[in-house]
Length: 227
Ligand code: ADP
Ligand code: ADP
Ligand code: ZN
Image (cartoon, rainbow, N blue to C red; front, side, top):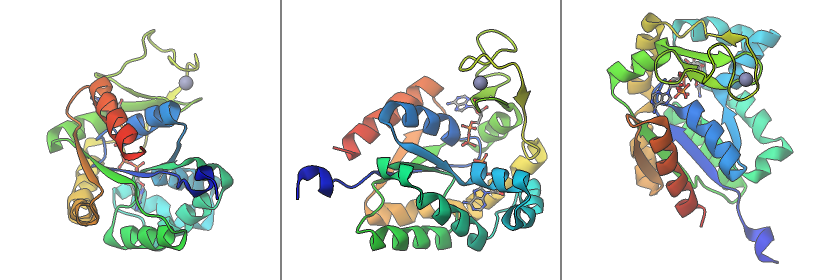
């Protein structure tokens, strides 16, 4: 067997509360390292928009800022992981979010003789998280993320990436729903930090820093763990 055939694709997890910068950083890592961003939030929003049974079941929970059931999330995640492009390596953005999801992921990877390469916890304080979520908007054409205060397009009203002029905001990005989502994070997702520390794959990053500074730190981590 040659070295190429034994190289395992990277499985990176971005952990962190809503607004920590997971999506922003995952898109940057995708471009820089040729990895595939896999966001369960994006997959669920697509299911809601398409009106699939999973989407119909998830819609009200998402609007209230709760967590969608492990059963639904795992089904859409497995579907996505079965597509050939993920062989390049993945950045899981917003998954896993519960102990059940983490155990299922460990099992899924073990079947393929793999494990999590690194779980990177993006640490932000609660007040910053609310402000980040409340000011978030994205390009309707390419999905590039922006913020009312921290990341406006260079030319007002025009997407830096694709030149699009239509933008959208998520229905669940209100200060009120953000609080419910933060509670769900502390109760269900934050305990996963200890799970990955126990597996010896935990990395932590100070995500209160600028987008560029966080990107640079993440780039160093990914380079180190993929070596
Ligand atoms: P998540 O995917 O973790 O929910 P996003 O990547 O969507 O978070 O970021 C939330 C909002 O905060 C976006 O509007 C984004 O432009 C902005 N943002 C992301 N990272 C930072 C940062 N380091 N400093 C300031 N604002 C940021
Ligand atoms: P954010 O990072 O800003 O919280 P996401 O786009 O990751 O937003 O998720 C939006 C919503 O989708 C969550 O509030 C939750 O209702 C649902 N969701 C996304 N990923 C998961 C998951 N892994 N498990 C359960 N619910 C999820
Ligand atoms: Zn765009």
